[in-house]
Length: 152
Image 1: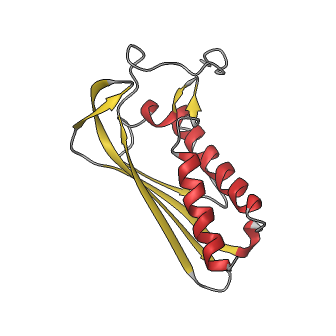
Image 2 (image 1 turned 180 degrees about the vertical axis):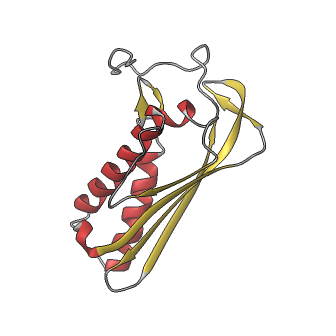
């Protein structure tokens, strides 16, 4: 497979796994836990960092993004060292809209995830996906069966 196709596949698979239902926090979908509080977020996928005041669910999102990116690079047989830069930009729309959450209409936002990688040769690759994210609501959402007990 050509390097261009490989990195495009890495970005596609990374965003697919990262935005999936399996990205959870205390058994609930991770993004619903912080969508109210974060309008924009830029994550350095090679060297993630957080401030001490960063909310725990956002810290989890940052750490998970870097982990999932590295995992997808390794699955494709690539070293993260071939990337000069790698970023994930997350942007929440300002407007509320209705969407389905477990078969019920809920108010939420469209959240845009854009992954960008600059390889050591200088070529830039990008992939994006938009998903509907409603703020966490335990009355509507089902907790993951494999979830650990609630973390304080």
